[in-house]
Image (tube, rainbow, N blue to C red; front, side, top):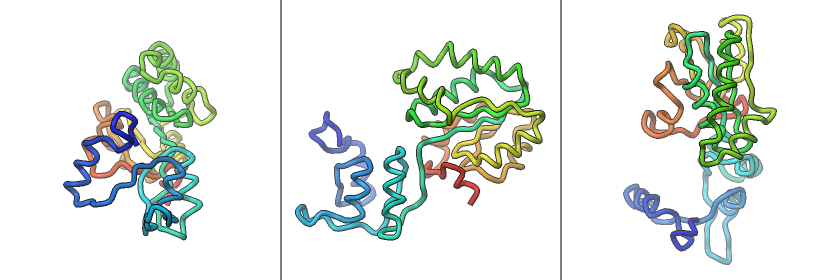
Amino acid sequence: PQADHGGWPHPTILAACSILGVDEVWAVGGGQAVALLAYGDDEKNLEPVDMITGPGNIFVTAAKRLVQGAVGIDSEAGPTEIAILADDSANAVNVAYDLISQAEHDVMAASVLITDSEQLAHDVNREIESRYAITRNSDRVAEALRGKQSGIVLVDNLEIGIAVADQYAAEHLEVHTVNARTVSERIRNAGAIFVGDFSPVPLGDYSAGSNHVLPTSGTARF
């Protein structure tokens, strides 16, 4: 629901629904929307749905978990995560901006750097501190980046870095290393993998794929 549009979704969303042949739209959001979709509303003559899909914050994800079985769900998708596997060849500014951009989603968003370069770790930390405040939601970014879910993981070598990335099983994984393509092919657990310096997560979210509703909280392992 949009206050600027009389309580309806943005007109572009409604236009997309029309193109897709969607003839029923409920203007409601959040965890309460999941309950409404799952159980319906007799007073408003809203029938329950068969399946609920899409990402959301921790309340949406918790609600989807609760109604699973009464309806189908696609996956538990949210809060959002990014992990960046990087070595000393990585561009600290690029890495910092990608960690910041994911943190802007939610105070519980996870932004994690996995690197075998102590120098890169220091450089990225410095770049984040000097740049995050320019974002529109800088308070949210700061809370997410300083939360226990975010951080920089310093490993002994790239082999261990790959193992850590696989165990973490991030929703979004970026690979900023020498021979990034070869390294990325060794990763088994990730929602989506973004290869090299010029493949930031927003590219996948907005143009490189048909779907960016991806598994979180380690569920990419299965």
